[in-house]
Amino acid sequence: MGYKTFPILPTARKSGLPVEDSGQRQVHINCPFCGDRRRRLYLYTDTDQYHCFHCGAHGNAVSLYARRTGLSYRNAYHELLGDSVIHFPRPAVQRPPEREPAPLDRRDAVYRAMLGLLPLSAAHRDNLLARGLTDAAIWQNGYRTLGSGKELRDQIAAQLSARFDLNGIPGFFYKLGAWRTCAYSGLLVPVRAADGRIQGVQIRRDNAERMKYAWMSSAGKPYGTGARSWVHVAGDRSRKEAVITEGPIKGDVSSFLTGGTLFVCVPGVNAVSFLADTLKELRVSQAWEAFDMDKRCNPQVQAAVSRLRLEMKKAGVPCRTMAWDPVCKGIDDFLALKRSA
Image (cartoon, rainbow, N blue to C red):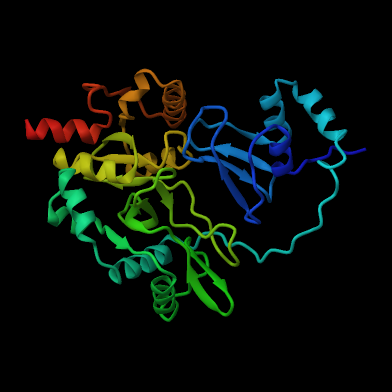
């Protein structure tokens, strides 16, 4: 008898997690391992895997059940095997194919055109000014506001599909004979590659209690495309020293407040898969880690710093840690306070 795999959602429910089957490829829940309450534990129904984008916990249905129950992997497997409901064969679901991301040139062109169709709200402008940016910097960085409403999204998708092939563009999908876009309302933040082209777009959601930042993505949608954990580059790309932090806005603000310091910004403290290649492309010879100051007491962030250092060692880039007055959580907060003093 071959090795059996188990569906992630029923297994999660059996372990005591409150999970509903939404019919989507991804189900987001609060992480029981690190206690994060922003639903950053992703359950993938197509691969029956899980991954927490806060603490990095990951694995398959068996390892999830083992970790939840305290059983060994072997004993967890056999307990699941004995549950006729869990391993009962599921009917195959025919889903339209999901696309791989389009080449960077095409993503850049589509996203630039999309941002050109949108305004920046007064509230978002005021928030960015309060963080230390000027109007010129705000305009140069390309921030825009995406309002709510299906009609607005349909208009954007229609205008863009008349000019571009939207296959492979994260955030767009094809349904009922038309291209559509799925994105939260909020501030759109371009995520730029080492050469300045826009490789993806993050959304800072308005009044969000969980998942304050989300990618513009159409993962799980018909003919849609999921975003990747792209790294954002801000500042003078000719510099050979780079500061590594979390989040594109934080990097944009910090670079501006320091006169163009090169900032390389991962989308999450554990999302470092594209980091080494980005540093190599930039020819960086020295890196400085500048994650938030809760790294002094947060074991998840401490573990992320250790993983970052390991990645830097593999890439051959020396990495040192930056610290500042912990009354300021982020490096952007510290720099803004220092400038106003």
